[in-house]
Image (cartoon, rainbow, N blue to C red; front, side, top):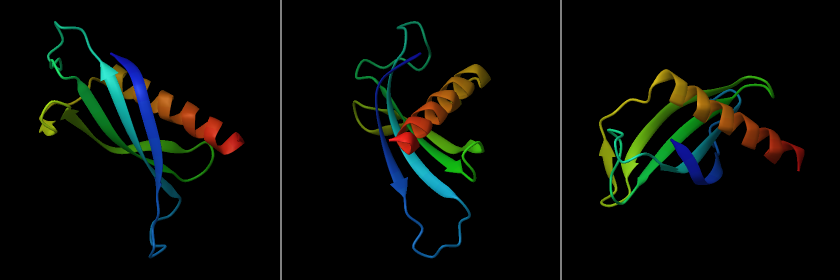
Length: 99
């Protein structure tokens, strides 16, 4: 699995009930044709990330989406794939905060 494009949006909490910050990442990924996640149109992962402190960043939830028809796929990522995505999100949030 390889991330080819991404976008980040901060999710605002108008009630100030949620501690910390929340972000939505949209990740376009490329997978091998043999992978069970493969679709001809491609896959997008919508990742909701929480950040309590600069060092405490975690995945709240994620959704796999078939870009061909925008349908949600009923798959879970493997632990190493989740770890790779979390690492990517941490790196990008660190870059975002340093700008």
